[in-house]
Amino acid sequence: MKKLIFATNNSHKLQEVRELLQGIVDVVSLAEIGLTGDIPETADTLQGNALQKAQWVYERTGEDCFADDTGLEVEALHGAPGVYSARYAGEHCTYKDNVDKLLSALEGNKNRKADFRTVVCLMEDGKPRYFEGRVDGEILTECYGSEGFGYDPIFMPERFSVSFAEMPIEIKNSISHRGRAIQQLVDYLKSNHEA
Ligand code: IMP
Image (cartoon, rainbow, N blue to C red; front, side, top):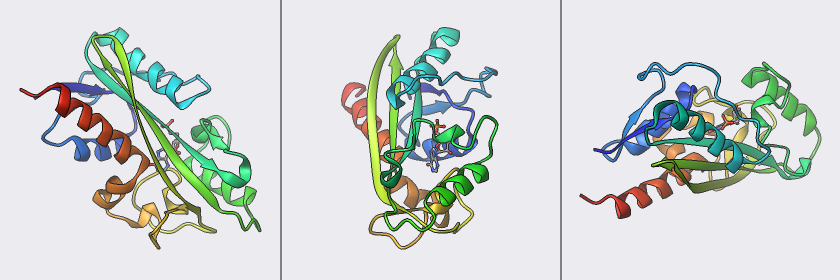
């Protein structure tokens, strides 16, 4: 089976992506290869950050790898926090700080429309290739559920009546931004790497 290093230090993402790529790709974590340190993400686009993360791993290992970058885009906030979703409430903030800041920013606002967008960068033989996934939904007025991470407790995908944090991982994966981007990656790998 093809081996791909996943350029993330986020254990939730690793769990989601491993579930999605089970039986298709052997997903190797940074911990497993002993690669430590902060992966840079200083670009101002999701694609730029995904490339930066994948390149960081490729330069250190010379191995095929992939990275993802995600943004939560809120219509009433003109697309914020977007590419700055991780540090919306400031450097070293927690998921809860970000959620609280977003709930405050939308307090009393009837337009709760938002989407999550993920760009995955696959680095094969040093060449980048991109895959994108998106899910539309809305921002709830308080937190629901304890699964997942980040903004999951306040994001309800369209056609559902529960937040991402109230869903089992398989259901979130089947409709999420990351799930859809990884599915594109799977389709590419299947059509280009048939044994
Ligand atoms: P990253 O730069 O791809 O790690 O994502 C930026 C931020 O978006 C993260 O720190 C999380 O707060 C949030 N995020 C990314 N993916 C998800 C998700 O699947 N659910 C909820 N929040 C997410």
